[in-house]
Every structure is written in structure tokens, then in C-alpha cells.
Image (cartoon, rainbow, N blue to C red; front, side):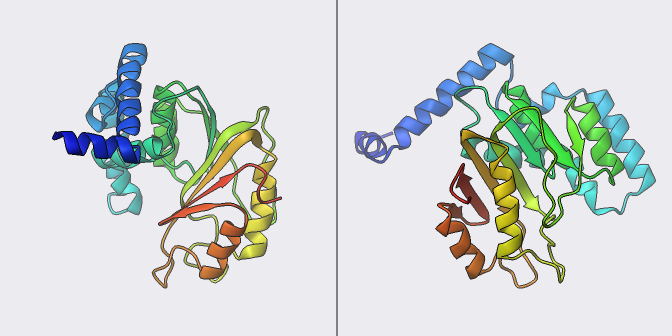
Length: 239
């Protein structure tokens, strides 16, 4: 790399982030014996047990939409990017709750990195249930519904995530508006530590948007950082 590029990176903070990432990956490999890339993470998974799960569910229902989650290479890459964007690949151990945890790949990676994790989801997909069990993850069975509080946990969380959200009435006539989100966020706030954070990842709706302009303004009025389909909210800004 040319000197001018190095100086430029130092000036815009990229060098610091790069050093943090490299140091974090070195510490991860030293502490947990894991190479922090999709191939390294896949090696941690028991291949025989995964193959048994894959064959069982492909034979049962090969045309189901969940089959895409069998692509470990893709979903490890997707969730590793989520982990990195939230700074979970370095720093202190955090308590994490993932709403709608699905097959558990995000929780699996964060657990490999030493974080204390738990998922929450409904129990209507046998493949997801088998994957959660195979990956050694903890999951609370619960359906997120409008104007209904989440269950109480025996701890506060430093981070609460919800990726590819469907519990908001996704692609239905019952899509959540400001009132539903305000109730939900006020409830979630009670489950956060003082420096905690919420990360919401939205799916596209029928109109091609992740959320309406009204909802964007609502989130931003609560101190949210909005980036593409993600909304990041700090503790205490939506009460």
C-alpha cells in the first residue's frame, strides 16, 4: 500500500478499525482456536450431525423455503458481517438476546466469540429447532405480538437484535405502525443494561421499502441511527 493511502486511512479512522479487527481475530484464534471467517466457523460445527439434520429435513420437505438456510457458507458470511458491524468480534463479553433467532447462526458465531447468548422464537419449524439443539444454543419459545410484552429474563442484555424481522406483520395487512413500535421499544428498553443497544433488521415490504418515511422519522426522533435496512437504537431514547 502506498504511503498516501496509509495516511488517508489514518485520517479517516479506517486504519484504527483495521488494526482492531486484526487484533480481535488474533485474540479469537488464540483464545478459542477459531479462524474468524466462514470456513473457520463451519469447521467448528460437527459435520456428521449437520449432515444428519440436512438429510432428515431435505427428505421430509425438499421444496420448503427454509432449505436456503442449509447453505452454511452463505449464512456464516451474512451473520459474520452482522457480528462485525456491531463490534462483537472484539471487546468485552456481552449478554445478547436475538429475537426471531431462526437457525441460530448469529447466536452461534457470537457464542463462539465468548458472548453470553440466548435466542427467542416460535417453535413451528422443525429444522430451526434441530439446528438450535445441534449448535448448542439456548432458546426461549415465544411469539412476538403487538402490544404484548416480551417474557422477563433473569438478566439484562447489552444487545438485543432482530434480523430479517417478520413479527411486525411483514407483508400483511397488519404491518406495524408507530404505536406498535413504540410499545415494543418501550418494553425492550426495560430488558437492556444502561449502555445497551437494539439492532433491528427489516425485510422489504410489498412496496419495495423496508419501512415507511413516517417510521424512519419516528425511529430517528428516538435517537436511532438508520442505515439501509437496519435501525440502531440506544437504551433510554424511546421511553
